[in-house]
Image (cartoon, rainbow, N blue to C red; front, side, top):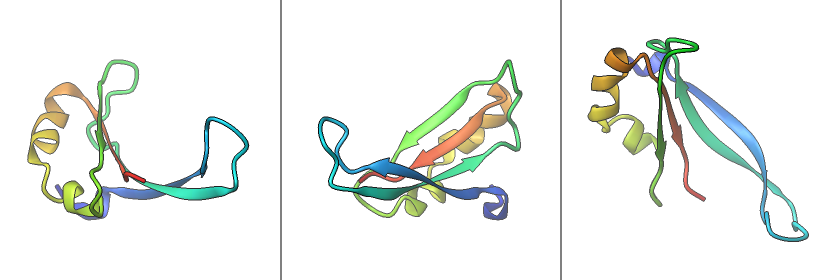
Length: 80
């Protein structure tokens, strides 16, 4: 996969979802929609481990190998 086609994005998240939150943080995630078939395609979602999620974006071949066949949107979220 050409990593220049992967978009790095951020989503503002509450630190605590179960009560009063002491603040927010920017959760990082990566999206690739090159093979996405809107309305018919799947979404392949990878929830990262405790390491930098870019390690998995660059090394998780199974998702990239199957994205075209499934018309999939590929999303990698960084673990917090």
